[in-house]
View 1 (cartoon, rainbow, N blue to C red):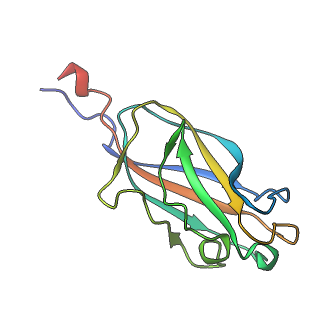
View 2 (view 1 turned 30 degrees about the vertical axis):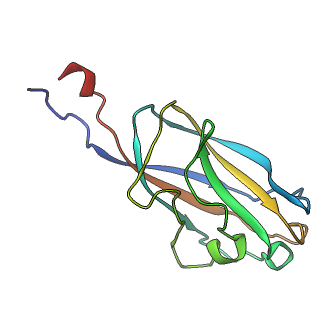
Length: 142
């Protein structure tokens, strides 16, 4: 029987600033990689955003944010920046599948941005993203 030296439930963390170059009439038009690696075989169970300081997103009211690992979308495409980046509130993002997303190919956590309306030219501030996932590196050894 394999021992569990590491907790199976893990949380990845990255801090980010939304780029000001989100342009109108495109969905997921800009992707920014973090330096956080999510392994292949992980099951993502949640994505949350937290803006510890003041964040102004009025110019990005129609802009969306979506988390990816490699080419795997973790979240649905209807998550608006103005609803996700709220000061002092940790906001959960709607996942593509509510029960969890399997990551078939490991890779860097990336945040994709797009908008069908106004761009993000007035965005001020940054935020943090937390990605909760289940992963057992000993799975193949057991």
